[in-house]
Length: 532
Image 1: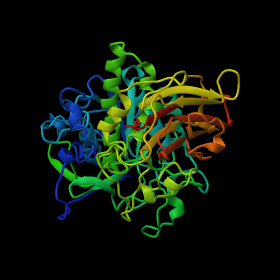
Image 2 (image 1 turned 30 degrees about the vertical axis):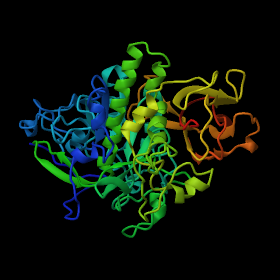
Image 3 (image 1 turned 135 degrees about the vertical axis):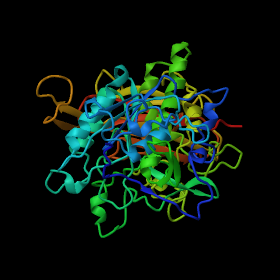
Image 4 (image 1 turned 90 degrees about the vertical axis):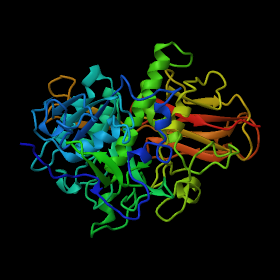
């Protein structure tokens, strides 16, 4: 008998009459994340030979194993597990997990998933009476270790309630066991965790307070285009919802949780038996991002395997993927002159304001907007951000690119790195730059197995503090910078700022404060407009 599960998820079924267009066909297309363009020639990016993962309370049905999937041959799952073991036939099959999987890997001609040829590994946690965080960590590790440890991104379309957290007076400070597990596994397994945002009826925020992954809010359509934060999102600083205090839904201190927005409203997806359903929630926004990683990594692996210049295994780093996705996000629609970097839509917040109205645009200490992070996922723009390759600060860099490198406070690494743009920038154009790095979390490995085991704990070693500055090329004092991103609490810094006048500029990455290791690896992505 198929086991049906109750959920701690960020989604709900919907059938709203006012919605003009339904479906994955829209959210995966140009009005959504623009992935269908990458599926076609000349790009031919469908996620082939790339592995991605999924962890939920239940799991999708697998054709050939589960009775529910006998008539469903369009959502092919590579392997399914129950925690850290193979799944038993028909156990823990769940509609929600199947819906999420279809967003990622559906091969249906109309409701095509974001990465239809990617290999998906999925683990069901099962139902645990109290806190299921240890089992959720075990399941995550199991997925991360598949394909010889080459799983590139893992989707979480569920969450743990603070009410269930065993810590006394638990808060969103990044130190719930599951949140620490996500940050540890991100670094240890080099995998990007994509977490459904805190939203809906509240109370399911863990692990949206992670540092090393990404937390995703969901967008809804305006005039047929996914371009507004959905009303169901609470964001990083929610108002009271259903009697809950906003304190129980907010990160401790000024750190914000939302990294990016993706389509999650009125999405048409597949059930285990192949029938379709329409639903809304960040549960369905997150898999758009997870599967987008597969498209980027297929391109990166293609470049590496053919020995293209400016490509290395650094292209697979989760910090690089995160920086690329966040830096290429849509904020303000370009008018056709390129000054706003060719962005395809203006992203609206719930009050219909834009990034240019946000405190994140005005305050260097706030790299992310509370509702939209850095903007709306656009995987075609992410491809454009990624495809110029990796560039070293040792020589002038092109208008668009990325790098993975190290800063430090010792002789092993410089205190700062300068990326001097080889072409003058156009006055009145915008510079977009995103810096990402990891919080250090260590496993208290009681049996020295180098794997997490039930009963083991993690230790937060803290977050080194890095900053970025937009400067004129000739300046050397950061007090003369044009703009900066100088948060003291985030593992991301982000600049989206107008160039005051045509001239030569550079981006400086600075190791501001040491908290743990004397050196810190980071990823940097930048997008600029050369002078005309």
